[in-house]
Image (cartoon, chains in turn yellow, red, green):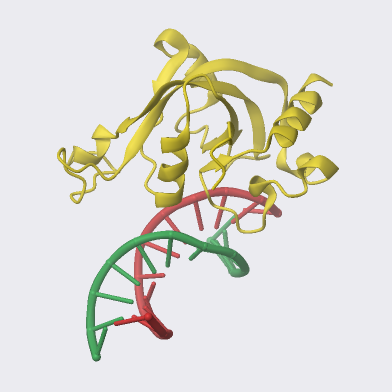
Length: 157
DNA sequence: GCCAACGTTGGC
DNA sequence: GCCAACGTTGGC
């Protein structure tokens, strides 16, 4: 695993939390809780303060990359795992030995034009992007520098 | 350690 | 709503 990865992508269902919700949040910052997948958790633990994160809207039509956030706080225990009433409650995560972690993300900007998945599939520079892999379900992913830059470029057009 | 059953994600 | 592609669980 390269330690130099410093661009990321997170998925969210805008029905429950959209990039507009992030922009409207206090300090335009929120904790990115509820991730319950080990690989995604491990990536979150690698996130460093200030690193840039693509925000992706899933389970909508069309699914699209919609903007950018930055890491506002590095990983710390996800307290929602300790809350019996939380849908993401996990009795196996304890305060002494937390199983799940989250980061804080701060809004950077929303693209004027969301970039639909469909369009991204046609972009050469993105051919190996994790997001575009068939059956890719990872909700927190590393993004290559070249991929991040290609996406930024598309967003300006 | 294998693998079938089950649950979830998420595009379509 | 369907279903492919995963990840997790648990019996053996």
